[in-house]
Amino acid sequence: MAGTKLRRSTLAVALLAVAAGCRGDRLLRVESTPPGATVRLDDVVIGRTPLEVPFGHYGRRRLSLYRPGYRTHTESLELKTPWYARFPIDVFTEVLLPLDIDDVRERDILLVPDTGAEAAPATEEFIVHALLARDGDELLDVPIAGTSDDEGDEAER
Image 1: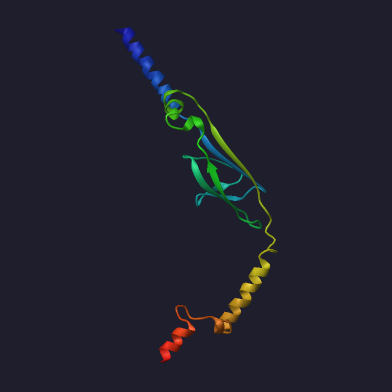
Image 2: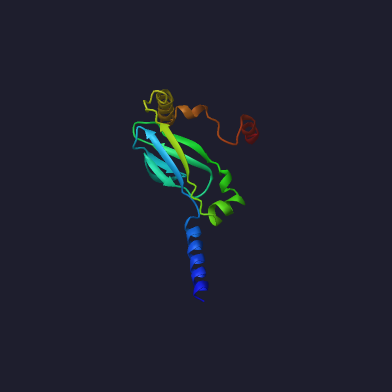
C-alpha cells in the first residue's frame, strides 16, 4: 500500500515537472542606434530600445520605431514558426517533453537622422497650393466633380 502511494506521488511530481517545462520563451529583442526609440508592435507601444519582450504567436507583425530627430522606421516583421513549434511536433516539444527551447528573434535597427531635406520641396509646393486655394485662385481651373462641359451645355438647352 505504501509503495503504491509512493509511486503515485512520484508520478504526480513527474507530471507537474513536465507541465512546468511546457514551452521555452519566445522573445523579441529590439535594439536601435541610437538607443531610446519608442517601439510599437502591431500598433501597441511596447517600450523603448533596447527592449526584450515576449511574443505569444508567430506570423507577420508590424514593427515601428520612433525617436525625435530621426525618421520613423516601419517594417513588416515575419516571425516564422520553427520546425519544433509546428503541429504535431509541438505536442511533444511544448507539452509532453520538458524541453525548454527558447526562440529569441533579434532586430538591430539603424535610425536615419531626419534632416528634412527630402521633404522640403514637396512641403513648400504644398504650402503654395494651399495658400492659392485659400485665396480661391487655384480653384478656378478645377472642374466640379461629376460634371463635364458637355453636361453643362445640355443643361442650358
